[in-house]
Image (cartoon, rainbow, N blue to C red; front, side, top):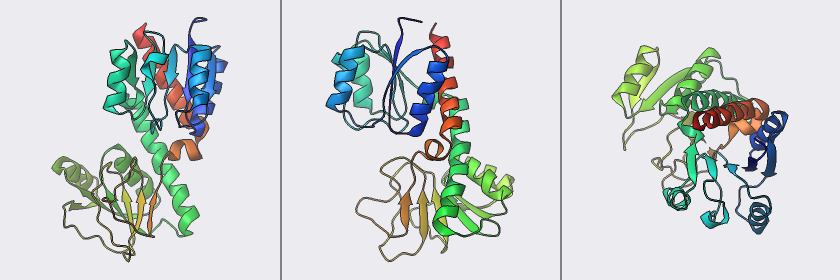
Length: 259
């Protein structure tokens, strides 16, 4: 293990906490607590020659030069462009996504749901009990949101395109609506979990939209609203230690699978 040199990259607080977990395991760890690819990061890579690199959930801003790394460098990634993945793999590096680990994704989804609750209280000063929420999408985050909000006494309507998701939500006792291009939402709160630009809003729309999906969010290009907010990285923002433990456990399990 002494030959393995870790570099953890990202401003998400779980990255720093994850580095602490690795250090407690006796690993050789360095961190770059920014999301951008900068000269400082490039110099650090050239200086320490990392063998194992952890990238942030939302990905880095900019392109990593795949020629900087020693052949066979192992990358553990969140969201990564196909171009960046192809460049790294073409240089003989190993690229694995911790977002493909089901245990990590489900635990992260639960922390996202609980993080949303904190964001909602802070931003609205409104109660959840007896409040109507509309949730777009019923994947992992949508399911965990429904679970957490329903437990707090919220009234829910689930919007989804998939008949399987609609059937599951309905079987669990939630009101459901088919998500279509001409769907109309009731006034109040909409929580988006769909990672695509599908929603049309006008600047005068008063629908309060909390977007929990990845960048660039759910609004169609050119659309804007004063009542729309994008909430990224809620697990690392509100629960950095627990989020870091999930990330560290996942990466170390992935490492054992490569031995």
